[in-house]
Length: 346
Ligand code: NAD
Ligand code: DAU
Image 1: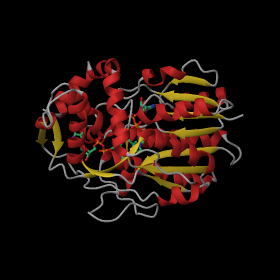
Image 2 (image 1 turned 45 degrees about the vertical axis):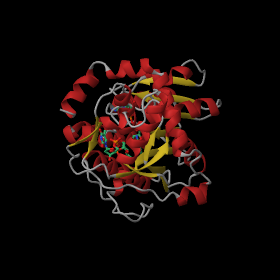
Image 3 (image 1 turned 45 degrees about the horizontal axis):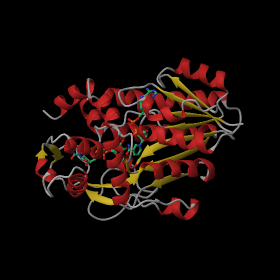
């Protein structure tokens, strides 16, 4: 019987992963460990809270004594590690939280797993990002062989955690899997990230802040496809391997925001072009990476995973989710979010 510790399962991607595992694998026990920072929200997983194979535990991966007790009490057999500070802008204004959670927190988990597991049939699956590879020019893709070149405190903290995880696997023979994914979008994403922030601002007729020229490129992936990829790598990925996960779906920020504006003009019965008038070019992000693009051939060829949904369809579903979940958005955007927004977009 597996008892899988999923960390960060009250956040955006983690909630989708926890839901998938709890519903698809009734024979697994799923322990969801989350500190419930500003980005964690129990509402994200309210639909599974009463399932018999599921337990939520509030706790901090920076507390190693707590982690030790958790491992002993629940006899944790495997880990899928998503807990992190995840927002690049916040890493620029306050890097230490990122160093602590993403580097030390990951090292704590590895250390507790190493000292509790006596054989190599336990999986430690570390979830990472394509940002560790740095920034691309107009051509080319990140492959699993691309040299690391992280350029923000966030990406450097994730790169450090990848290195520590690989060092543990190499030195102690742990059964490690790592995947590095591109930008996710979908339901339950905190509205500090581009897509939900723009949807919320369009709905409320607020300016749409585009950093710099708006020509930076991101490769967008439907969050439920990322969750399915994590399921695939966990169950069929090879020990010690890294898999890049992406959507083959590059968009400049400005084209993406224009698309959101036109989707929302129709849904909100606004005249064509009216939401786009809210677009406002603002000061660029410090050290803003120009382009991310993933070569997702390895996971396709070796594990038979590929994205399942077209971007326009996924984006429309995402917009509908935000329009239908006003209470979720209002709860999150009251209070501390207002202070963050004022400070960041002043
Ligand atoms: P998120 O910010 O939405 O959620 C992070 C979760 O981690 C929150 O629930 C938070 O409460 C929890 N957490 C933070 N610090 C913690 C701590 N010290 N102890 C326990 N829990 C803590 O993040 P996300 O966008 O869902 O990203 C999840 C993971 O996926 C991260 O590791 C991130 O680096 C990675 N990732 C994200 C993306 C993306 O596009 N969002 C893409 C690739 C990889
Ligand atoms: O590539 C994977 C990464 O994608 C993940 O590892 C990170 O956790 C996740 O936050 C995301 O990082 P980005 O910095 O790419 O995402 P964000 O949504 O913050 O920004 C996307 C692009 O939009 C980026 O080029 C910056 C730009 N942007 C963002 C915001 C919030 C704007 O132009 N205006 C904004 O207000």
